Image 1 (cartoon, rainbow, N blue to C red):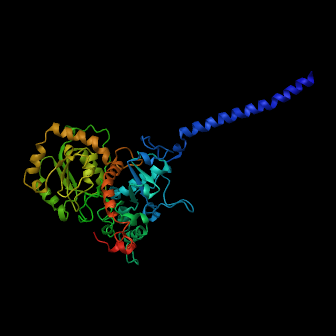
Image 2: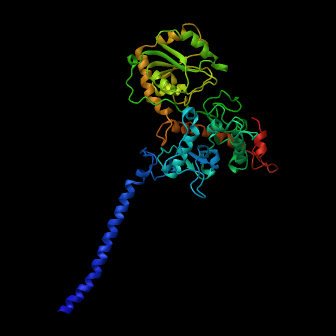
Image 3: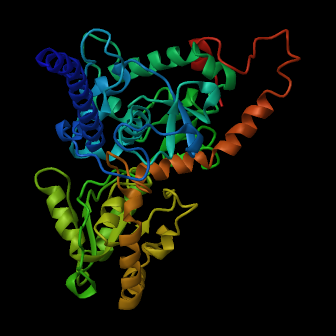
Length: 462
């Protein structure tokens, strides 16, 4: 009997251990599943990701659902994040940062106002790496699958940091980078196929891409204005106007209505400008002694940004006058301060004007009318409190369209730019299809309309 009992016990023992092991594995697998769903990696990241309705942490965007499919060149870091002193981690670390673990910091001050190359590149990387993004634009790995080809050169930062010649060099590093970029593109089949007509080139600083811009005339430019471009190189038919990145902070929870803003009309900035900006001087002498008008010299030096922040938030209307170029950052500072812009710049092109009606939240005045004695003050004082309140509320509605941020969010400046580029795609396809009409019959040439070497890019004229 004892022998039988011992035999039964020894039979059950392996079954008990097997059951215990299976239970342990079951609970451990559930722990891993729940742990991954909770996303503990996000807690280790320097940025706390937001749930945006597009791709979240760990989930990549689906190109089939994207508004715009973008092929981006893997340019060496010297053209983009290397300008921010970023270096690939370790040997063979690739050319791009892992944006899921934080992003290289962009320099502040006036550098920020022309930083759009940085924000758009980050969003494309996020779409591929699984960081949060609304997924309006998605990076694809094959140019054949793309609507446009993105050239990730931080041209504005290159100009700001490297446009001066440093002896013993005979040329600036900015010009050298432009030259190397031309050489890179001339060797690429993506460029050779279309002559660059589907390429998106960002040169938001008025002096960005100063030497190469004339070689990029077929491309889609993303610019702040057309002030320093001939119409044959840049125009509204093919190019996109993007807002500056504002320097003053957004006026969150703004309850400062009409009676809480004692200044009627506000301007602080450079007064004596060349070219079309001479109108500033005329307006200064017309308005400087008017009641409830603040018109004075100012800059970002010292506490200039803090002064502008306070001044705009305390004013009903903010002057935005042409300077050395038709546009300036001041317009976008006034929008996020909810100070109704008064735009006096005959040559200005306004971002996203095909979908935004600026007359709903700003006052646009011809330069010839603005310099008539008494005209501007009569116009401004004739706007009722009710009309002003309508524009003030509209500013609070539209300001999101002029905000650059990472991670990008639905309908912010980054997404609005992608949508504006997407609206150019039918025109781009038409140009390319027309270009290739007879390509199969032209066997005796090598597409002379397309670049065969960097010399083509250097000699081609619009």
